[in-house]
Image 1 (cartoon, rainbow, N blue to C red):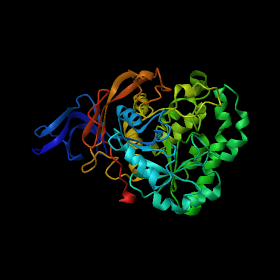
Image 2: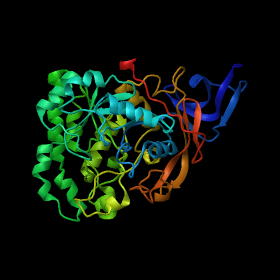
Image 3: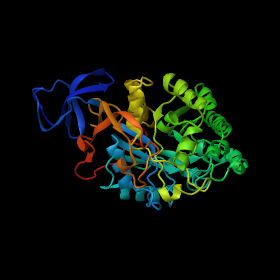
Length: 443
């Protein structure tokens, strides 16, 4: 090829829909223009990818960046900084901020705050409430909106629709796939008294496996009744995986790296509040089911980090006063690549879960594939690099990770967003120029 490109990524091993092999990637106007041998082509900028594997850009479809209202934990700049350093090209951010993102004004405010501050591309969920349920069909079409998010069980913040009639009303009004935190609030309330002060091992007893499967059965039934499509976040239990595999016609599934990597009670005994999140880290039998049904049998559609930071001071409170949630957007790639290195996951399945899955579930426009005419979003990794994850590496404002001391095999070495090198060798480059993600159903 003799054409001149804006950027050529040279000399790497490309892994995409065509398989794995040596290839260059040529970029023009932020789009992929050619994949193949570009040894005779020239470019305004060349990136030497020798020794690296070039992947479609990783998309994290569940993060909580806490802005507005909770900026002491995180904000859009620091959260997206952590994402870019972790090899992530785009994030979908949750609505449980202060104020909640539940109307056109709060959505427009987040987009304005993100402009020229976020290092990655981005989209925002609109929160579903009893009050706005009638208007969700309009709200989900707002620019920069990735869809509707509903909490069926209370977590951080005050967004909650616990009752079937409320969920039914949401599902009757949305046209895109709606996203759910699926825990049964009624059972959670009944079991609050089981919390043992200062004992984090009681967290999965309070929010037990039955709380999850009871809610998910209700949710699937309502989706079937209304003809709606649903996305079930952070699935954690064996019963849910065995149930959801028979309901893929209406339900897509997310699993988090932490639920695949940590297990109770060891995680709580070792990490205390740093292992506390909703739904909880569960016992090994549930972890094994996530791997069997979610990973190996293909029931899971996406990996999301559920990045949900709190300060060290907040986490230092004794259970159950300690808040639930942990950071994860910066560690998603090395954690999952370590599972690849250990033979538990193929690189192809990793790609499916972190880029193609987001495109398939949410209908991203021009994102989620490394293919001609798609956005030039690339995550470049060294599959053999051995690094130790530490608190000090974390760009998140909270300054900690539950994976401090974790020996990773596989590391993000560069992040390219729409043809712009945003991160290289652990350093951010240039200025923040993330843009809103577009979606096929709202073009």
